[in-house]
Length: 426
Image (tube, rainbow, N blue to C red; front, side):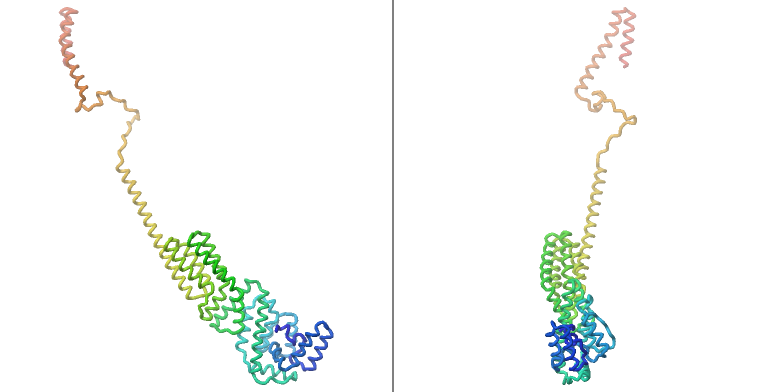
């Protein structure tokens, strides 16, 4: 039962009140609120029955001073949380349940309730209950067996109130609370009891369907990356891992705390990515895409020591291979550039020289046809022309004196001889 539904709270009576006080208080309540008469009569019947009363006593504040009990009762009626030091562990447990529905941070309370419930001494409980009964006049509880049987119902009561508080939470806050509870269990080296077990089981059931859907979606995105390792496909896969990993993380931490290997979502994603990453590097040399995916996986598996070690070794190997490939590529590129430079230099060295222009930069006048021939290899036409010209010159030498004599007599003859000699010298 909820604390607000406890018969002591409904009637507004103390755990130390006698049967007479309880009966009178119930009559007053029925008179003031006749529409709730059935509720008040039921509460009175529980408190007046020694066997049924025990469950209400364990859900209330036994062996607490009257003034403190009144403060706790007022807080419970208003669903407000108050804290008082010095009260016994059972009363402290029950006061933490007050106003739980309105609480935002529940992790510490859940861990406290779990530890208190798990470590509770049944003999001490029996003593607290019987001390209150000795004041109220009800018969004492005989033996711890009755306490143990009723104690399990306290666990159900706490579970119901926690579930109601969870139903009032936002999804992100629920996940964060579950993660903090799991971390606390991990710090306690896996020591926890039924309260934490119930809470974490409830979380697992609430996200189980979502995790299955995210797992299927993530694996499909890995296949897309393998087909086309584009930046958009890689980022989509990382986004899916981020969302699925956030939901799975409380369960992952809890699995580590329990020393189990039940890594829902993270396990299948890890196995698939190992295959995809190997193919990305081996078949497509897409080292950057593989590194990005494994870095994201490292974040979502950060709470699993064995997985962290394996992923870090994989990343180290991929980075080393990537560096070697880049170094080899750079070396090959440098060698190619060197060969190209050598080829260009050789081509320039072997190219024919271009004649330099004259200093005055004027075009050279073309020579006559006869002067363009080499003097050592005259053409046949040039040789023929030279021979004809020689014969004509000799005939002219003989004719000059005769022509001169015919024209000018002896004086012209002499001049003709002189000219003949002059021409012969040329």
